[in-house]
Length: 143
Image 1 (cartoon, rainbow, N blue to C red):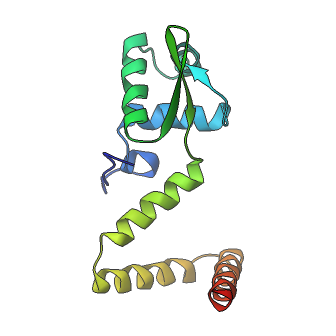
Image 2 (spheres, rainbow, N blue to C red; image 1 turned 45 degrees about the vertical axis):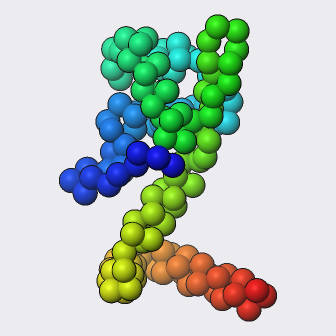
């Protein structure tokens, strides 16, 4: 993905996407699945949240395509768009990108922060983390 940056002052998708980009992606992920949709369809889906011009939605969706978040195909004179990844895959990609940008000390700090956060969580999250670690250990044994 190109053009993705981290804005620590923002939360959720808005930490890595501009507000309108995040709004469009949330709308697409929540209602569209992997289906192909027109700019008009997305614009209409956002009408109850924001009044947007067709060209604004079109430009933003083109930008999301350029960043690799939307696939695009020609349908007559218009383009149709579909998400190129799920929301969970997008979050994983961003997390991986942040970790890859850190040096060894940064990796150590990130792991320590993760352990601190999980240790404050409920037991279900701790169980989930243990299961992920066990699964990764099995994968490494097979490799």
